[in-house]
Length: 322
Image 1 (spheres, rainbow, N blue to C red):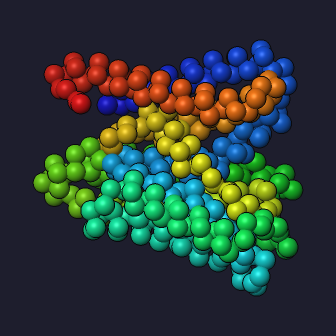
Image 2: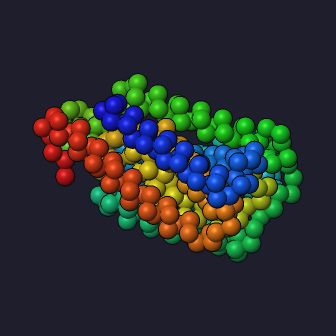
């Protein structure tokens, strides 16, 4: 299994290098510190969300509401920073708790009402996005006063890029260690791989899924707060499309749609690839409308390659996966 994951990650690294070479040739300004600073800065926001989505996909579920949760959390954080005297780290903790509860609600509806997570989170995505538009009237929220959390991640800080990047890496390393080196990680993969078999082995699969939903929600909220700090403003459309971009990054990185298998390093590489494409297209002077088309093609190719690789490896063991 580890060898299979490594092969997928090497494939993504090779693709990244190929894209880098192509954009370096067609866009002379692509190879600059400013360009890569922008890529890593935006990648940390989407990347944190994608890590949560990866955990949930490994557990065998989806969350289409992460983009709306991202926006709702950023909005609530912005409101309290501008209109209250609470300590900013206390506000951060409260907003993250709220984002976690949003994810947990998705899990409860999915697990106990036996409604597919795709349908549940489609509904909650529309609900929370509607709440954001209702409370803001579609008007952006600007920063009225600074705070300690914003000082850490704001664009005026010399360390904003480094702080966001390190936060992303720390979360990824933590998730990877839990998944690959703990009993909890084994239970998550077992639940996503075959829920019935995992339940028969004594694993509380419902609790595992609830935990995965909660973590996914919390990381979506953290991403929204991080973007607010980076931009020093909140847009009601923040996080729009992030649910699909996060799934695309996870799939490109080697996470299997059916659950049970995934890699956080692969997801990080997938996020970097998506943002590199976006930046490279702009630098090359091409129409930005090409972006979604190219990412769509890459997702299909990634799934096809992953399926082929999985078939080759499982075929040697005499196991067939549909």
